[in-house]
Amino acid sequence: MSANIPPHPTTVGGTIGGILKTTWGYLMLSELRIKQAKAKDKPYKLSDGKGLFLLVLPSGSKLWRLKYRWQGREKQLSLGSSPEVSLKLARHRLGDERKLLVEKVDPSAARKATKMAQAHSFRLAAEEWAGKHEWAPSTTVRNKRILSHLYRALGANADAAVSAIEPSDFLNALRKLEDRPETAHRARSLGSSVFQYAIAAGLAKYDPAAGLTRALTSPATKNRSAITDPKKFGQLLCDIDNYQGQPVTRAALQLIALTFVRPGELRLAKWGDFDLKTAQWEIPGDRTKTRKPHLVPLSPPAVSLLKGLYELTGKAPENFVFPSLRRGRPLSENTLGVALKTLGYDGNTHVAHGFRSSASTLLHELGFSPEVIETQLAHVRPGVGGIYNRSHLLAQRKKMMKSWARYLDRLKREL
Image 1 (spheres, rainbow, N blue to C red):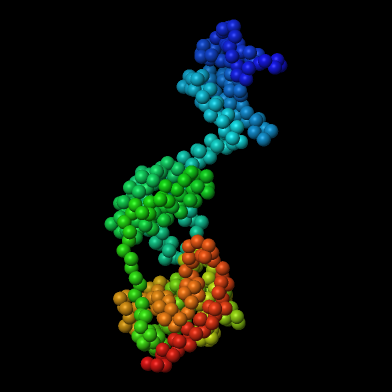
Image 2 (cartoon, rainbow, N blue to C red):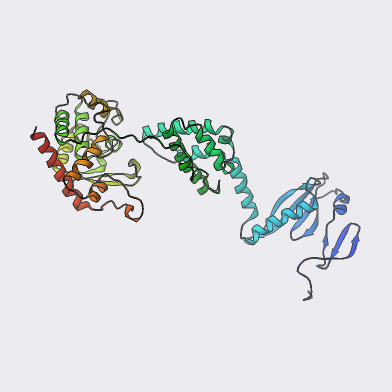
């Protein structure tokens, strides 16, 4: 080839039969040539250069195709049919696809990904995301209920492509749920998780729910009822010891007072989570609020309580420590609350979750380090300081939990 050949074809000598002759030595198509192309017994191609050609079929159909090489293999991509797609438009589409090649992207793969994203609705993405999680039964029911509210609020957008939903679309849906601010905020959080899943799966480019928290009405803060007066707390402990209901329920209330774990973590505990020889209870990450494993040092009274309970429920590692009377199920989330009400402690006085507040308040008053208390409560702080370490401050926490058990015993004896 001559070193003086220009980088782009330029026409010379006009047209011959509707065909443009170029300085590259091949022929470029014209609208006239395309119109005059007749069907033959076999398919044939009319090239326009740069991989673009018109495929003329025996049926008379004229199809635009792009031929290119990807990772050493020859591939073809459809660019539409003539005359619906003009020569000018076909060349424009050619330019778009060749830009992808320059960016090291396979045009065929990019097109498949786009079609998949367009076929994936928000509802479908949400169902796929939810199906990949194993929540506690109560959490599953709650999340399904909130997603159902969200689908109705989104209307037609629930079944539109997840990639097509804009922040304004999602905010308008959340506005419809704002008569219950807590539900609206939960819906935003779940929706954001769905969009994050869609991004990871190549179904969306960004999360339109990410920046909407401050645009919603803040839910009213609800403090869970808890007894923090030492004398009254001591009376509660005595009442629990004298509880006349199911022994397993009494043991659950006694252990939650000694360990102040979350009620759901207590109810779903299995014998395989405990090592009574080392006096430790490791709660798996799939059962904690932080989704990270939490190590609970066990005081001697806690170990003694569990050894006695083992005779009732500890036949296998997969057995629930606190089973329901219904075979194969843990205590229901209402059992502890009902037991407390039976003892005279209603929802305005003390609830199962309140043992955490009671412990936090009283341990601070006893002079224990806030960091040790917060670590034992499994409160993960934001930033670098919040990076979780299952053994963080373990020695200090073991000492604190033993002191806490002695303190509870003293409160009962001083009544």
